[in-house]
Image (tube, rainbow, N blue to C red; front, side, top):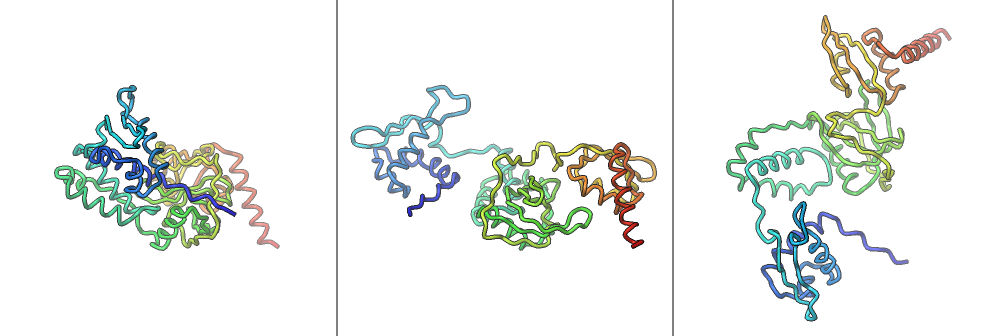
Length: 323
């Protein structure tokens, strides 16, 4: 039985496309077969690249702003007529260089299928060429919590890079330890913490897992199968907000950490160190367990149905002691 070759990674093709125009400009009149041999691809793939390039131009381009390459002559020779600046070295402004340096340094601190050697090399070269931008970048500190186990980082990176399912042991915000299989989607950082975003097969929904709360992780010999309708977290919202109705709470000073460790919509400081918070709740079972554990340190102000569920659970627990 024949098998289809694995598709070429998009990053590999993009790198070749960026290199093609300046190389062809410097080697005017070269044939399709010769150019394909130089880049280690077939003549058919090279022609596909050229067809893509001649449909490329600057944003908001008109017909005359497209890359113009002629390669359909009888002798198969390639002529770059208009490279649209792609044959010139990329020049970054100081602000662009500083932003890129900061991004590269942050990327080096988070897990993912990065080529670490290439990342370090690019950072070193950019630092050497940055000039004034280097001082600007050095003045920006983006702290990412790296207290998680390096073995967790390595396993998460493998899962992301190889597209494989992970089995994790996870400790939630109320010290509840669970085991679950997850299909990794991406690594991300928010407010200085590193997260794994994945399709959780236990919850049958997209979930985010703080890396410092993953106690153990195993890369399974199963492919990651993220549903096509899975919606990634909207980082533009500025928080890992659960998809659930908001609940208004009053927190005693000793449990103010609840507002720090969970996404909240608003926080209002009250007397005696108390806080009034509005917190979206996606998993009411988790929320009820949190309230049972915290006792009268948390007061629910606007959800009598949840208060009744907490009361019923507490009475059920007390009845168990009487047996």
